[in-house]
Image (cartoon, rainbow over all chains, first blue to last red; front, side):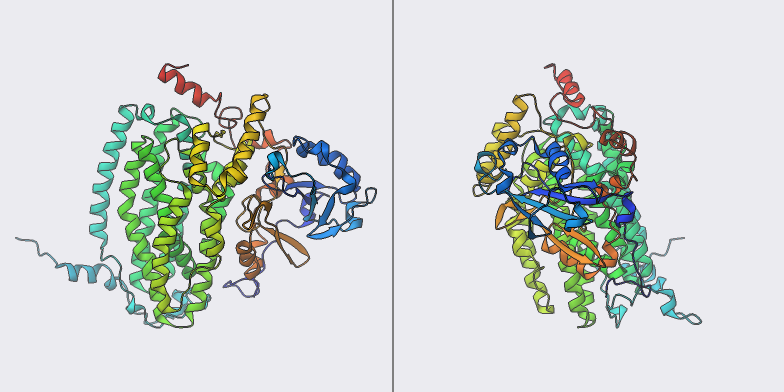
Length: 120
Length: 500
């Protein structure tokens, strides 16, 4: 039973359906083990945005304040898309490589251990 | 002529049980339509034991006496400029969270108990809910009165009611209560009456009222005392509800257990803010969150669940996770507010060196290893004139609506990600506890009003964060928000104390 309601066949309004975002979809981006950023970030992005724009224009603005951001060797980064290993294609649109509405993109930089090596 | 006086027993019978009547030409089920859909089976309402044999006439008398004392002290507090006797102006920020986040819940409790008091078929339970409903209304009123004095001297109190319905972090307490009130009457009672009022309320009220006492806030202490006898009654009602449901029918046991699991989890998530207040916001500390959790949940709650074992009720699910979380959540939460200090209706700050040492002492296994480095980083940035305010909006948990700030408890450097797919949409959670709640009733939580998504949908004004803060949240930007250092609150305090 998807809900315990007094009304038979009750269904709720999906508040976050992609149609409500004026042409954007929500994408979450988290940098693993860098908890200077207390939570992953949420971005409203056009589904046809190439991954390169996300990486080179959207992400630096909030992430670049971290002292290790400049040290990231992007060729060594491990990516996860919705929890599964993922190899972003920089010039392909988000939606054409499975980055959909409310997808979580995570990146891991195992050689960078955060501020004072504390995962911060 | 001498007035005839009823003895207590007769008075009690006439003013409670005798208020009910038999339905001769209407179907009783139509009069109490919400009593069955949750699956709870009540075979005999007359078995309800009134936990406090209080009748309405004595209720009014007791409450009126308490009000008189309370307002006398509030008047004295204000005439003597009590606000100048608090420990430190940082303390007042805890009151701002209380007024915007907790007092409106008292109002929701008033509404919820009034509704539940109509929906139960048993008169004993109806009368008890009615009294609790009136108590809750009294609590919200006395809290507003107690804090109205601070509103004259500090920023951030002026729009509490407007803000409760809008500000991102206030959707956490608001949605907690909305969830309970949108359930049936029995779940509401297990959620609020039992899980919150009985099991967890001591963790809210004791730290808050002792915190007020330790920090010279006599107005809040007095309010607390005035509410305390009501709270004792509420706790007894919560316990009676559980025992009654479990004794009525064995089929009720698994339903009640599921609700206990759900509401214990939701309650502990909500209390994260109290954890943060105790460890970071009280200039004079009472005890650490970890110590409070051990005394008020692990000892007191442990004994309670031992007692309930004879009905087949076990400890709430994820109690072991919570036991580990007591080492972490206050630090994770205050870091979140500190880094979002431009978007809060109160001030935030880096703890002093003395406070950092206190935290190391209270959390020897976790603070220096995981959390002190964050504050060292914040201090370095502040020293360079680059006080850290995060620049993008956070991902939120669909159920508790808290930013995804919690970590795996076995690896506190790793954010805890959980998700579910439901009807072609993805939903994200901060924990297994929140994911379970969603998976059980997805049609309820697909409706979550998540502040970050609402901003992206254009429902909160904008386009810039500052427009939203100023126009939609009604935060006085530059006055109510940002760091404590250099705030108008701090400057006024220094002028009062002649240290400006």
